[in-house]
Image 1: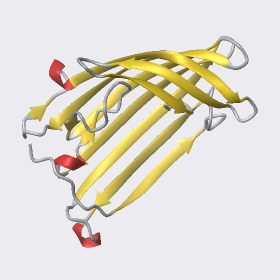
Image 2 (image 1 turned 60 degrees about the horizontal axis):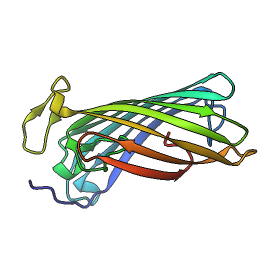
Image 3 (image 1 turned 120 degrees about the horizontal axis):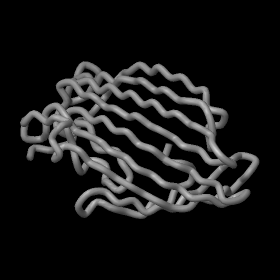
Length: 189
């Protein structure tokens, strides 16, 4: 399929806003990140192209310590080689397995607190690849074959209550053979 690596050197800009109440384990507020990378041969790379990313996360507290998190995530590429295309970024999928010129996703993460240190997580996400695919065909989000869904459930434990540091163990299931267990320090987002 012509998927080969490349040497990359890039410059970029970043615009960020963060009103979250805590960076380790936020329970309210929102986070915006918009950035671009301009990969250029003139800087020493082997190819020139652009990549733009937009991420918006919102945290809603509810109940006795429960938090619902929504994330909208996007990546757009311009003149990228196949190895620079956007990838599906959902739990249950391997990064780089599904590629397209552009990717948009929406995710919900419910964090239910059961006690001072224990809780459960419920997760659902959907993503779409659009623009050119690896074969040069045009992908659209309204075509089912270009959309990917994911669901996950698990437990979390607060390691350090003062610092709000957590560890999570989740099982995620995507479409087809896409699934996995995730043990992580901190939240997915």
